[in-house]
Length: 189
Image (cartoon, rainbow, N blue to C red):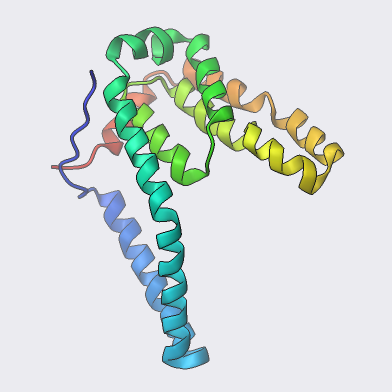
């Protein structure tokens, strides 16, 4: 069983992103104050917190699913079906999983993080993410009625093979890169 212990989020990347986001909040708050005073600033913050509370249950569920996956995905399973050694089989399974998983980025990125920590191969992770973004069945269900069959079929036909193609290329051209990516994804102590 693979277990991931998060000791703290102290990496330089997280600090830089937090500083940038804080700066953006301050700048937009000043602009809001200039345009409409404190009432516009408070309206903006209330709207933002309202959106946060809407996605919190989904976010919590996604991270619980990711945690369950980390506990349930054994090293043997990864090695046989999803790891670098799994080759094309792992890429195709990642693509299939990404294509059928429901939900938006709040769901599939925590799952992708769980796969990353579970020692899955780079091709499998990329196939999962790209499968969700380019060949998602959920997307097709929305595209057909909203954009029409002609545009949907054209878009799907042109992007259908990109997830496995890119994932296979990454699998064979960058097999050792996944370990460096994992090291960068690990929180500092």
